[in-house]
Length: 477
Ligand code: AMP
Image 1 (tube, rainbow, N blue to C red):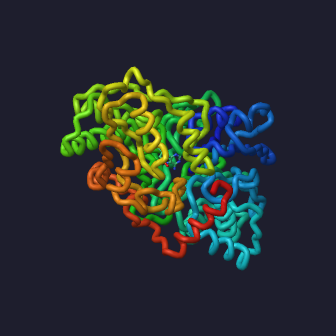
Image 2 (spheres, helix red, strand yellow):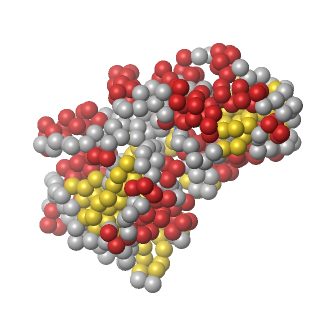
Image 3 (cartoon, rainbow, N blue to C red):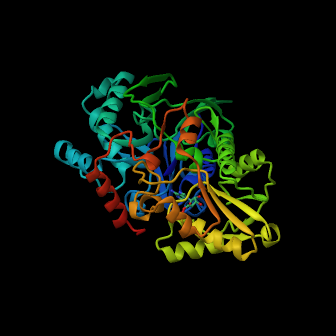
């Protein structure tokens, strides 16, 4: 998963890009980068947090009225600076691109780009596959008089060739500023604008929090398969290029996006409240009667709020979080993951001691966090511990950019609910019901592949095995 931001205005944009990216730092902490276009592209990227990569960079180092920014969470490719985004190409135009998502048919695309277009890619990052496929399609047009229709045709052909989830932003030097999404609209991308003393500034971003931060109004989310092109005269051109049945990633609402983002007109915080309320109904049906509801900070507050309101049971902050510990989920070994969970989360004994505690987290993937929390809460004196997952059991790998692509690591892929209960050693374990989740999204067709194994783009067993193998070989495992 990654965060992307693009700004095109009438003044230098680097300062705003750097600020705006901080609002989506949660989407990626492995690498960060910014490119701006003046007469030439100025590109800076490096490994780590924005503050680390851009600590000694001033906006004056990145001149230009149009630019792109990226924060990376590596799921495909190594965590090498070469794989950080943005990337630039210089033919048939000066072009720069960032994207969020995962390309599924990377081997085939890489081969086609080499065999048919003689492009030998220097990175293993899939944004290069998208950029060079798009560039190869543009190359077939009349480059002296490129029209918006030519650009949209090239996007349509790119969408035809590139299988997977992608929201992309692209600068085409002296031509315009483009954003497009994959035909299923799996990853979020929103357009915003603001009126400044110098004219209009247009923004494309992964999440609307960037727009809030930059003082922009939200114009629209891109529809599945849609492309929006802003030419050098700031005229806006739009086309639905190649569209399939929408399949927006429901895990964005459950875990990935910030609570204050609005995606497809739904505030993430409200979605989480609703999921918490659904859990409450299941809790009652199971006869569970907790004394308090606590959340696993920070993503689960609204689930817990919805649950506690609907149950009429008080919400308490029962776990203190150390915000200076890295993400335990991404640590390479089980031992380090366990140690990090221990360092990151500490039960507040005075709150949980003697109480029947319902603890709610967004999801159970490997079971590391949940198992440790159950033990820690018991040690802190909880009388009973009920572990609740706001997501249904995750049983299948995600091939669209959420870092859970290795099946053997996913507990519900190979254990029954009883076995999970036993492993976690909780007094009760409760998952969101898939039907409840689907019911909440009956008006917004979503991708539920990690719960159902039904992949909107279609993925063969061989491809799944290949994607898993790629992940296993990458540096984390
Ligand atoms: P686990 O400990 O492996 O069961 O993972 C569940 C925990 O990791 C939950 O607390 C989630 O908030 C978090 N989580 C779930 N999915 C991801 C992901 N793809 N990347 C990072 N963290 C995640």
